[in-house]
Length: 251
Ligand SMILES: NC(=O)c1ccc[n+]([C@@H]2O[C@H](COP(=O)([O-])OP(=O)(O)OC[C@H]3O[C@@H](n4cnc5c(N)ncnc54)[C@H](OP(=O)(O)O)[C@@H]3O)[C@@H](O)[C@H]2O)c1
Image (cartoon, rainbow, N blue to C red; front, side, top):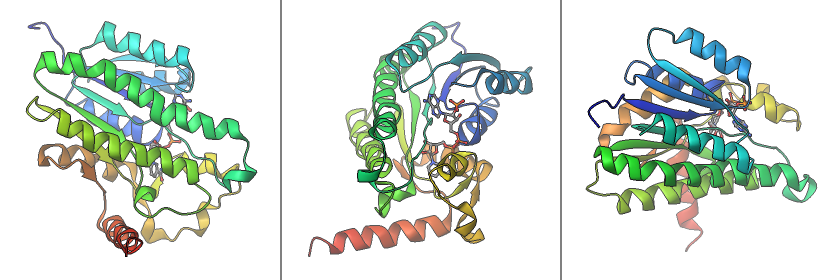
């Protein structure tokens, strides 16, 4: 292990939060394994980070078994990883019964299957290292379930439960697990939802955060021992109200 270079694997590294995680972690890690489908964007990131980190670009569609296998192979070849950021994601928008099933299955594959596989592959190496950080990018929507994002929210709720249970199982190993639950964040995410008719212009300005602020809060919270991390005071108010509402459903 003496030749180990501190390493991060980030999925969805070609844009938004994933790219920002890579930028931030390049100050901490010597090697970044950047995974996404778009090679041009990954290469642009590698060029940007030149001199700050050794970037390995892995072009992979993580909704496919082959894509996940490619990312896992990179994890084994370039790892062990100190940081695993399961961030790649997208959302459809609209009533479940009216949407084609393929997109819904895609979210299950990407948010759940790929996260499980990469996490399962990373943990034995992290144990060997004596520690590590796993960040599963969930969503604020899990705190206040609503219509039009039924499967998206459900896949993210999986990540919350998974992260909390995993942290209990990994107590004493030095491995930290976080479920990051951002609210509206300025990235390309809502552009993909716009193809389903979502209008981001209708979201009031005060609801938005920057990717920089979300990632800074996530990384700062790693030492706190908290699994559930909701960035932004306004988002935490929404989370508290959503959880209180859900508690009320039990009465
Ligand atoms: N932005 C928000 O308001 C918001 C709020 C709550 C939670 N989140 C979560 O934050 C995470 C990051 O999203 P973002 O806001 O940064 O959105 P984004 O700017 O659209 O970035 C999404 C990233 O995921 C990658 N990705 C999408 N499908 C993929 C696939 N099949 N295989 C591999 N990579 C794939 C994209 O890369 P390629 O297209 O190159 O593959 C891109 O790098 C997601 O999990 C999202 O659910 C976002």
